[in-house]
Length: 36
Length: 233
Image (tube, rainbow over all chains, first blue to last red; front, side, top):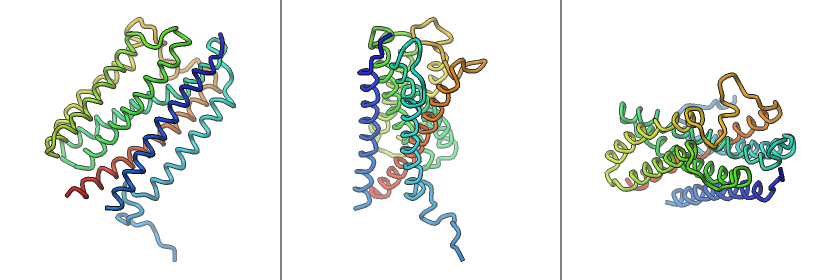
């Protein structure tokens, strides 16, 4: 069976974007609350 | 004399920053180790080829989703029994992180499904039950947001958190109970795994990394919920 590296890359890139995005969202919120 | 850690000291309060940062760095190191194991150490799978490496992302994601919703279940019972606000915050944070990882499970499963099954999506037992689980916990979060009175929102969400958790065994055993396109469990199955040791090891490293990330996200989110409540009071 062919390796389909494009699909592997897409899955890992999506996970990186989602997890990093959520971490950034929490960090931003934390900064806002710490300022208050 | 060295100062000893004291309970109640800001550094050692649950969800306080220093232990959280340690867990965060451990999770980051774990994810890096998981990538090395998944791409550098684990061999190319004979039947599926390299596309099988999506498993090191997909399976730990669903594991975290199961854990997250089980935590919502227990924390909801604790809240209803004792009215402990920290339990409600834990349930809220865990549901949010669980939705994140369930979404990731569905998306990575879909990406894996296209080259192996020839379709992005099919209404088989596992996929359908996961989709229902996903929608139920989105509903849980919406319910929390819709009710303004804090105590009522927490109580209603706790009831839904308990009911929704009943779907978890249905999701896990759906591939055993029904003939379905999705393969049966490879790791958590009766009689032990038939996978080669090195693939199991790579998977376990990712399980640990994702679990640490779950703890980090939930602790951070629960802390933020507490700060939000304090700011609003």
